[in-house]
Image 1 (spheres, rainbow, N blue to C red):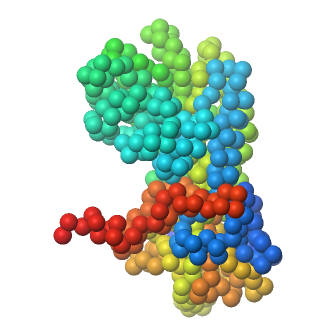
Image 2 (tube, rainbow, N blue to C red):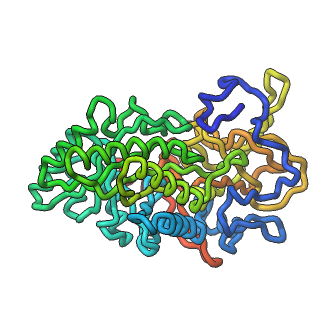
Image 3 (cartoon, rainbow, N blue to C red):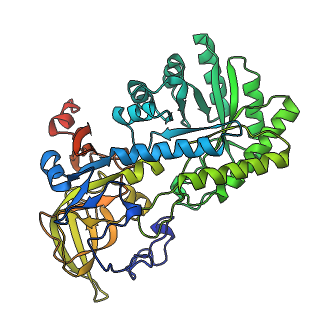
Length: 475
């Protein structure tokens, strides 16, 4: 099927079988690892077995089973620190910058502990994500609570914890946060999430700043201005700044430039008309990663330098000082740090009406551990991980074990023609939104997350068991 980075619904030929995707080329060596797709310590040993952190995948599969998410701790923490250092350097001569890891990409206590130790902030979208952050030692003042429909109990819990920011998402929520803060005798620090009317070049389900969607206060119709007025009228609230998030899997700063210009215009107007200079602006996240050879993401330093340049330019044009900037990378940190390890079961060649043959390689996971291919038409790559092969490459489709025809993990990839039952396959780029969106479809337990570093592996999140699932069943 022809691919489009915004998803298969946008692709020519959707609904039928067409040629190999334009970005996918038969490999000269099917054993080669493209560095942009894999964690930093990933390599092959002398026998051609994939290793990460000095541990081979055969050993990992033997200890922890398959499917399993294999996380390179050095890579994860290195990416987080690269963002922190890049933005600190780029904005150091201005009002500074903060990097908050977006925990919705993937979170657990171990990850929260890394975030705390490495000095980043944390974005959370639920009470449990907040609990995980606090349990991992992230200072409450470095945590921001997001969400378009926060329950009162969640707001109360965040304020009781002394949370650093609440990103207010609607006019009604302003009064609810203020009322709860008043009951607790605290002053809530808030950001106003603004819908800036910028639709990033991405799938419509993950584009979050265009007008017709559920997030934020619109710039049109004076809604955002009314939100500012209402916050400033409530002494229980401290308006720290404006927030925007324009989408996901973004590969350039063009959309951020437009969003920043519109946010800063509102920021400047508030200072002039209301005499209130907000000290912060949050430009969100959404920075893309390489899932296939078609993707070319920006390095954190390049991204930070370009963001600082556009902020200085826009603020100079408005005659205002550059406020403190916060960004929220999630996928860009977690995504490339992890791959999913599967074991092959059935291999099947299917004759198509066109006369061509499609090879289906079935693995022991699927849409329960990676829904993104079915949900978004996302593209992934994969490799034969348990051995080297000199067999000619065959265009293959990697599919899961679930009772759905849409249970596809990797839509198109060239795999060695001798890949078969018992082999291990590894799918890179699965650190973001795969475990966090995983399900128990067909009552399949969710896989573990295994962290590898310095030739040692440990479980961050254990594999679910049959007993875990039956324990919820009151029948």
